[in-house]
Image 1 (cartoon, helix red, strand yellow):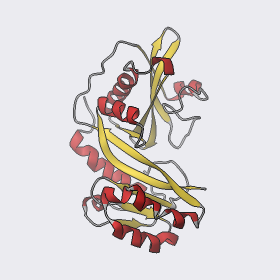
Image 2 (tube, rainbow, N blue to C red):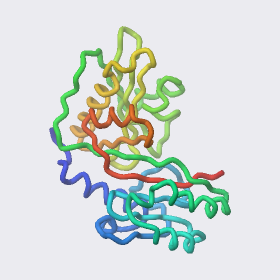
Image 3 (tube, rainbow, N blue to C red):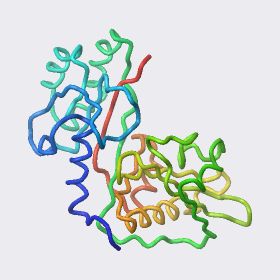
Image 4 (cartoon, one colour):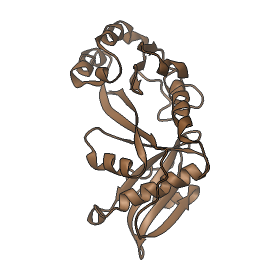
Length: 252
């Protein structure tokens, strides 16, 4: 299987996150917490054309916060409360809520993000498979069955690149898709039709798509929320492992 080998995934991740959080890749290797001013750097993940008001990330050692300068004094005090995962504990995060509220923001969801393991993953299952690429995916937009596998509509800033479906005749049992959120970075999403869940379809499709992305020379990644254990299990069974955690602020 060609593509970036596992030892390079974390190096590539630090480069990507440094663009997102306007810092340097080396900042993820130090013990001290880091506070930066947001910037719309080339090569970042394109979820918005607005700068972060507040966003925090850890890869397990320190935390890096990219935030509006209005929050500087509050964040300097917040960063004294701990480092790494400790600052993601709910009681500590909630101390930021009143400060965010002053400016019309509230804490958002924590995103738990996964990178591929070094293991070879052989998809387990016997399903009819159909692949779709780029413009072929557009016909699925607006289908309420697949809110996670593909974007709700075509987004040129992070286009859907590949979709793989498990089918029975003309019926789609499940769909895994990936959007190119940053150049060469493909985020995987999965949806399985309710009556076909718990049959291994999700793991099978995510494994297939993971392998296809790596074969194409890109990096697959996967994200979910802390309480979505079903999604966690799919990620782990499909050859992913936890790599970083983020939290941000949403406009109220």
